Image (cartoon, rainbow over all chains, first blue to last red; front, top):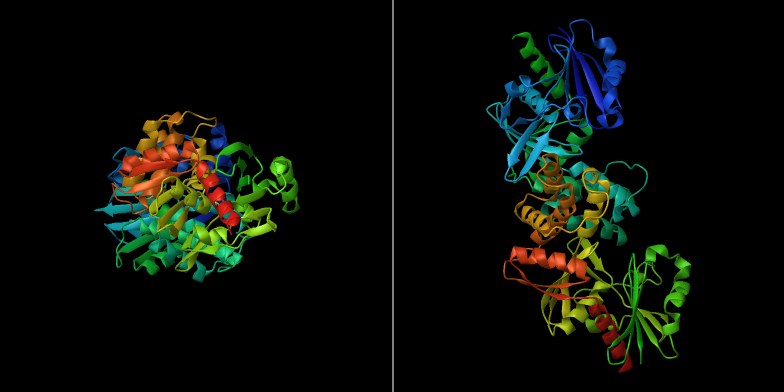
Length: 294
Length: 294
């Protein structure tokens, strides 16, 4: 049975048509994240983007923010620790045996909870791809997730607003006046300098101001500042993970971000392995397979 | 000789008419920070706001961002360590013996410089007010300054973008959707909880996301979130200062902010003394007095 696998996030909608044996037959991507969809319009957007894939008997599984309060149908979080089987049996069905949403995970640490939606599916796919039962993973993004997996289960995770802080600082802060308004090429050297300053530094509240003074004193060109700032925020994220040199980290996500995180992690002294978008498709295919065999 | 003392900052312009003996005869405040003034319009704005105070022989001294590249006249930074006498002899004269700008300070730590403009005058005024030669001071604001003074000189300082991070997070981040759009009363309890989470926490990139999940899980009312977020960013700033319980910190600035910093510092276990706006006027009066006695 073919599977229509969707990753329906806040700002984008990606889908894959996946064969019974796991081969990705076709992929599509739309700028139709849930923020662009009115509450009642999810069925219509789904039909227009993927209706032709939904043959009789085809199953569609959806991971990501489509399962949030602002999404198509709210899928209650599975509490951590949680394994693949826990999310596979708690699907939120939009149409019985036809379209379902994969639940996200929640964790309660002291008084403050944390949540993820979509990353759990990527993590279980990545573990299978790499034949791992235990791992430390990072899923970079607007809100990066750091995940500990133990014996096939997600035992701990945390959210880091790194991508959003970069956007806030580069678009809305005093640094926006100094940064170039048009896109510039990534500078490895400036990124590395930013990572180094963050790792040695006193915290982002202070180091971010250095991006301004470096420019004020003409010690860094305007073109290099975005890469420097990117290094500062990613370096700050790494610094807070209590990593030791030699630790291994699995980096899961799109190539542009996994490259930066790999560079920063290697600079810190951690070893890395990367997994791309196919982790999501494999995770969803696996969930579909558990339904077939019930 | 009367002195017209100005604190001309990025977003506001404040002035005081000060008698020979230091008494403040009159104060004025205008929403005419340097960002609202065209490069050529500083003389006209000055004349309209304070022209009537400028009798024959009256001196005007200006501290703050009016001495920056974007200000009235650029006053080169004095390098640290610097004492009161260093800034008093390096005034940048707009009109000889009539209007001058007090230089800011710069410091070079490793590869990244840091700067202040205006706070140096407040610090020297505060030290005199409290009869101190050595102190650790914080000047809260959009860009807070932490200052070490030793033997009447500023020996070290650093900038913290705490106020700006609060504004970015509350106005432009995902948290803006959860925070109330109109002003709410300050909640001491929520502020204290934010400070505590920051002091125990893993860093602002992570703890800021907690403001969202606390709301998502209905563990904090929307009205309390601004105070909680304020506690998070101020707590993060304190956490990075390598303070020890029992340390004394002089808090210099406007009452609304010094109260919050005092609460957070006392919660951490530091002792505090507060100095208000009059530190600026005293600092400028002292500079004027050195000119009189030359």
